[in-house]
Image 1 (cartoon, one colour):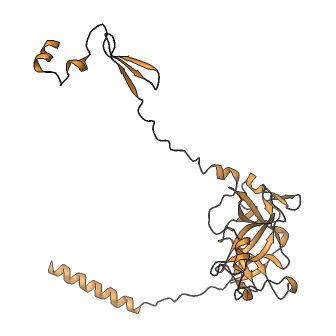
Image 2: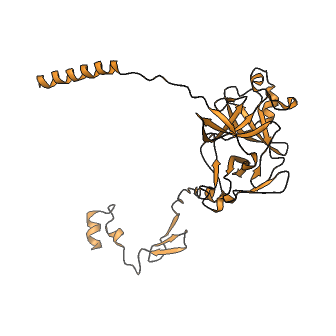
Image 3: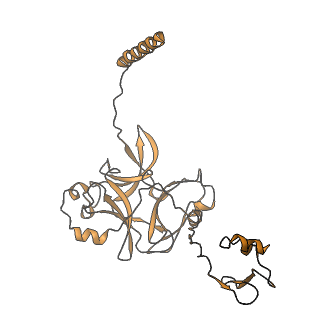
Length: 292
């Protein structure tokens, strides 16, 4: 036992000494870049689900493959999500939450500072960037549906906003940016996000605008069929109270009436006592002997 204890202590000392010589890798910050993409190959869609809720979907069409969506109408433009009708792997790319899309402004990622939200306002559906660290700051309006519909709607980006894709060390990644470059955008529509973070907002104004359906969760209510598959809420009903029973002792028999199903039970017929009366503990020993 003593040898085992000494051996264990020596092992611990050896491991500690070895760990002191191992290099420790410091955390390295990752800097992403972006690359331009054909705008006609991308679409932002607001898909209704639940009651007055919308999920933001970004779809990328792979050239030469099956058509991923179809657009009809105006104000708003309704979107037929064709990719739901077939296995769209290799034909379409779909992003449904903050892991797949974010805001990029003047070559800087704002995915940690701003979350994307679809907000109804005055008969229109707005795509907004909301400052998660300073909720009182004014929102950044990225685009809108130009109306409200019960069908999936196209989000039309405001002037200056465009789709780009994230790159890392020259490799194009799947992440999609809602990108803005203040240097090349029209000066009358530049949303200077850095200045907005330092402004004092009118809280009453903000509260009248924002009742956001935040698109941060990875939950993906992408189609009506998938929503229905989530199951049905069952109502739990308490059991009914025991039905009241009435005992009729008239005549030569006991009649017990059950009001719940209008049934009648006979406890004694033609003067013959039931077994329950034979074993009546309230009787004396002599009375019980007479019953036999």
